[in-house]
Image (cartoon, rainbow over all chains, first blue to last red; front, top):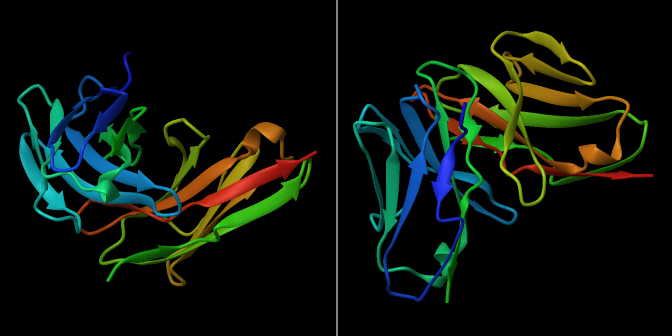
Length: 112
Length: 109
């Protein structure tokens, strides 16, 4: 079956712009989590969605938001981009209660 | 607060055994997972421990001690392809998966 698909793979934006990233989970997976990865910082949890509801949110400013659609696809949006938002954004899907998360290849966002 | 601590870097030679430790402090605990990430790649699942003890999967083993809030990943018969970053992750009371900062393993010939 198809894995987790993230689009786009690469993105360059300028400061102040906004960006929307997309994640299509594995078929049957209703949980989608988003992470920000920067060198030396590991994976920082952004938020998790399950059945179109945000269940949890990490310690990120309100400029970071997301949503999930009825088909479990998820989007995350970052408004008023800052240079520090440059990172690899990963999404992961899993079945409810399952211990294993499957990651997409990520979207590499560069803010200039 | 919540935290996961693991060494930032480990170096070993081919054929050797290496242990990557992880200590955690979280609100609630449902299990400790390990993920491997090669440069430019996505993290991939290696193992999961919900109960105390050792889980073995081929050359990789993972250990958990809930009373010590501690676990480790043991890699045996190291191969060059094992050079990667390894992350421990805890699923907490909110059912979120929180990751450590990662350990970069370099395997030398």
